[in-house]
Length: 122
Image 1: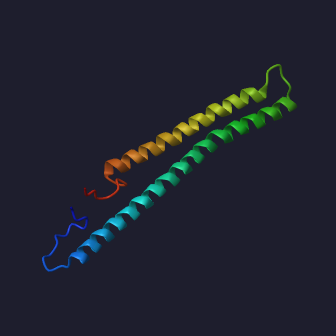
Image 2 (image 1 turned 180 degrees about the vertical axis):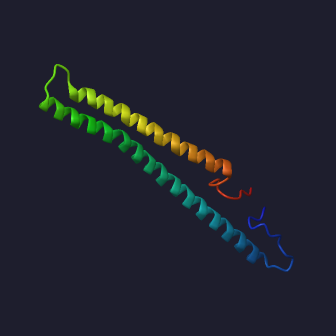
Image 3 (image 1 turned 60 degrees about the vertical axis):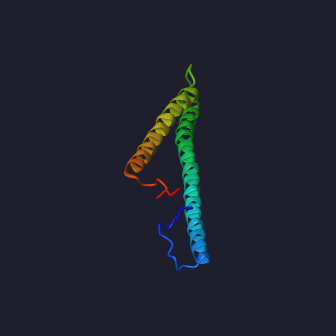
């Protein structure tokens, strides 16, 4: 059994004390990992919300402007459909930008060794 604290047991150290120390170290490590997992989940949900809004807002603005133009300046083609589609395209490019940016930051952090879960003992 490996000791997560990295200390070698001393011969005069009571067995119960050593076992309690190992157990406490494991518990602290599990709490850190659980906290990191929760942070990752919330970060992912936040990113989904950001991406969703970055697509939805330009799409709705395009549709709203299109409805206004259709009422104000009637034409043979639909401004609403045209600007809805244009807003969707702008929103998709916006979402692509955010995903590429966050992916780049994640890769930089992994390359620098940040956020890899700390030390890993068997």
